Length: 373
Image (cartoon, rainbow, N blue to C red):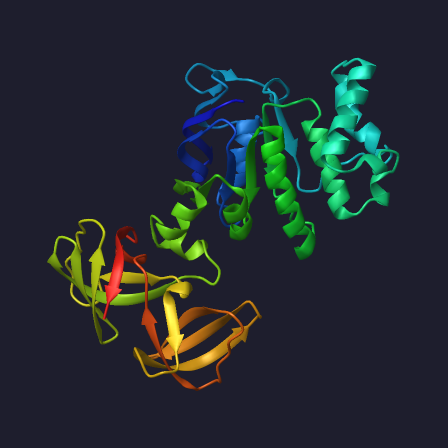
């Protein structure tokens, strides 16, 4: 399986940068998600690797072979890059049966008929669509159509499979089922997957690594749990996670290389960091404290910081609690079938060693550690 390397890849239209100076390595057999809001450059990046879009400058190689090099004038066409592309709308031929849709590309590649039949049978069995081989796309559900599109893309045994938001047309339940299927398919095919999505839950659950982009610039490229627990900056921290992270403006004063004294809306606290930290010098609020909702524990026994329940959203497995503290709304997630009354006085505390500290001006993460009140 191939390694894909991008070096200083840029796509520009006049003064507008679709992708700016992107450098990344996609390892063999990886499942990479390109994640970000609409217009951030993720689809443009995918299309440049596939050869459907020509970069303005930079270098791209697949399996050690340069497919684009602006300095040497190399630009290998898409059909010679040995990749498969799964589109958002599946693009199945409506007048062809499932069998013909899957075999069509192999016939154009002049595969022998017995080899085509064997490959189609193999893929139909893998994707559990054997009984649909003689049906037409209009006779299939959305999930079945997607399986056919995947089978057709995998048929010629491409080195890399590219997917551009392939689950966006499915309902919520089917999307969840197809995420499971895609993750299993990645293991079964032993292939390299590159997947575009704006859905952070999809990226978190599917990827071996997430490339998170904003306005054409890569913000972080790490495994999902690293991206979640150690976001590089406020954009990453805010984009990844549902419910979103709590952000509290605070004034910080450094008292030791790994110890920071904090004033958070009048609450005096100390953050003991796991590494040396440098706090920016400024009057007033100079940092932002980031706390995931699951790190705020609510209790009714009078222990901890006092607040009022602003609202609750019980879902059975967990309850999202909005807490009014000093005029600020904090979000807590309480696991289990619990609920609270609106305007009820409660107490809460912070737990864990993953409380984040960001520089308010640069917006970059400067520390992480345990918050002690």
